[in-house]
Amino acid sequence: MIKNYLSFILILFSLITRAQSLAEILSISLEKPSGTARFESMGGAFGSLGGDLSSININPAGGAVFIDNEFGFTISVGNTKNNSLFFNNNETTNNFEFSLNQGGGVWLLKNYGEGNINQVTFGINYQTVNSYEDMFDSKGKNTKNSIDNFFLNNSLGYSVTDLSVNSNESISSVYKYLGEYYGYSGQQTFLGYQSYILSYNDDSKSFYSLVDMSEGVDQHYTNESKGANTKYNYNLSIQYKENYYFGLNVNVHSIYKSSFTRHFENNFSEKSPIKSITFENDLVTQGEGVSIQLGTIAKFNSFRLGLSYQTPTWYTLWDETYQYIETSSQDLDGNTFNDKIDPRITNVYPKYKITSPSILTASTAVIFGKIGLLSLDIISKNYSKIKLKPTKEFSFYNNEINSKLTNTLDFRLGTEFRLQKTSLRAGYQFYGSPYKNSEMTNDYSTLAFGFGYDFGNTTLSVSHKISESKRKHQLFDSGLTDLTQIDSNTSFSMLSLIFKF
Picture 1: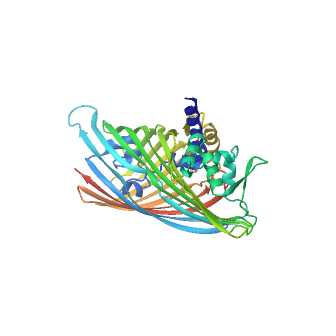
Picture 2 (picture 1 turned 30 degrees about the vertical axis):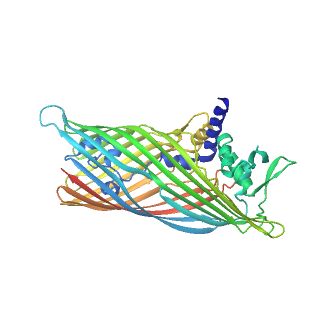
Picture 3 (picture 1 turned 45 degrees about the vertical axis):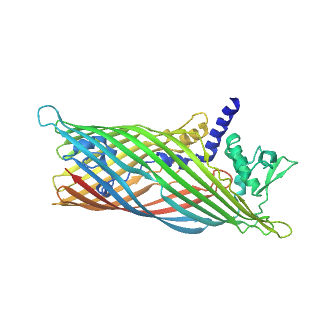
């Protein structure tokens, strides 16, 4: 019983040291919803407008603004161009993405008799709130750090006897055992030792590196991620008298994120026994989340006001990892060796919880008769309120979140001009950096435009959105902690079909 309990604690600790970083936590907590083409082309500024399937995700009261039963879907195609700067070397990658990013419908129950409730609306909407599709390459000559420092940092407290593979054992069995009873650091030390990056000094009782990078080392780091945070809004809304709307959402999130990194080093000093290193890591994060959302909209002639509040989202997540390392080395006689350590073991870690911050959205809009409109949303979200549980095991990271993250005020601005059955649209979004020191992720904005045509019972809308952003990515959580600067240019085109009945 005691052994099992210690094993559980060690695995929890390994989870913390392995997976959690501010960037990864934020990737779960960030919401940058992509919805219908009309929603996108107007910058998503629908908090006081309603009447669009994606508006339900911003303000649940928007469901009661519909005048017809509707259902529809949206497809999108996009490209992200990433330019990375690493030790004065530039690399460019392009990532193409195609998705069905939105779908849903609303059903109206109208009151044709007496009473203050004019309409009750039931709705369901699915859309992507954060896409993880991304890829970048970083290449450069590092004169200060090698991946050997990562393995050295994890080797503290271990000895050769902990890492040996006996005659009745295999690479896979020892790697699995170390993960179960010593955690992540034990597995990393094992990989470093078995691939001959590390050797052991019996006198000092410590590991040392066989890498000689006195003349620098060429490094090539590739990061590729896939998946998305998708959100389902289950909506109930009412129209009270003529000018007041109230709504409730139960929101369900589904998360799948796959991240693959490949780190390659070569061109060490001629004196180095190690000639090249290839280190690969696969991380898959899955889970679910739930939140509650309340909202209201009030109409005053041509003026609209909206207010919505989304509770924190309570996520339950679990991770899986897969690792591989390969080295090329040379002995004093000039003989070369290739060592591949492929345990073929998938590490499955205990479930943990992340609570993302609540979201408060205040909105206003002006309606210019049948000609068009102008709308504005202001969104407040305090990222320092993110919490990880079990609280005791994650106390270091909760303190780091509290000290490094901050409250943001984001803005969405949209306009629409109507000419009979054709609508012309434009929008702007501003996202503030969640960091107190925005060096890791800068503020960024998006511009959008589009048009729609009403065929009567069917509406077709098209939008195009462009954005630029800057961020820094840390290669590893310890040892090799160098940063690569990534400048991204993203463009997305979307097409929506809406059917009324």
